Length: 135
Image 1 (cartoon, rainbow, N blue to C red):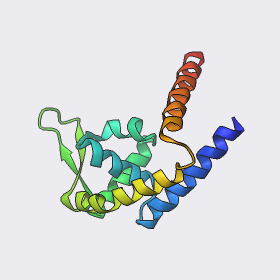
Image 2 (image 1 turned 120 degrees about the horizontal axis):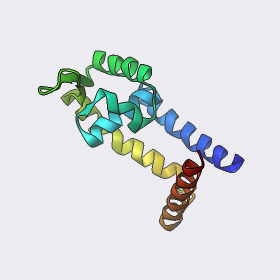
Image 3 (image 1 turned 60 degrees about the vertical axis):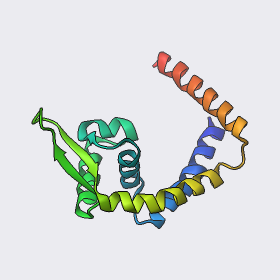
Image 4 (image 1 turned 45 degrees about the vertical axis):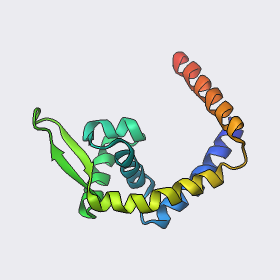
């Protein structure tokens, strides 16, 4: 458990340092990355996708909306649902910075071969699923 925690902390510290280089908190970056890859998403679903609390979602969406990187879009069919959608400004920014961020993450993970990474993913999924069954 200690080894897993230390590896996670080290890699996350590197990833967070890279996110801050672009002026984002890890939560802001996670929200933008989600929208960049998945497109428009209901605000209510963001927390489960990027592992942040509902209060943090509102705070981060407000900040990103103020900066002009995302906008809220009401659902036409259900007034209870509001979507978060990346603006063109946000898309252009992420078109520029995401490849650099992905490169930084790839570099941080370069201690393993592609095959070792695939094995690690399989093992970590198995570990998580087994632990979830005991919860």
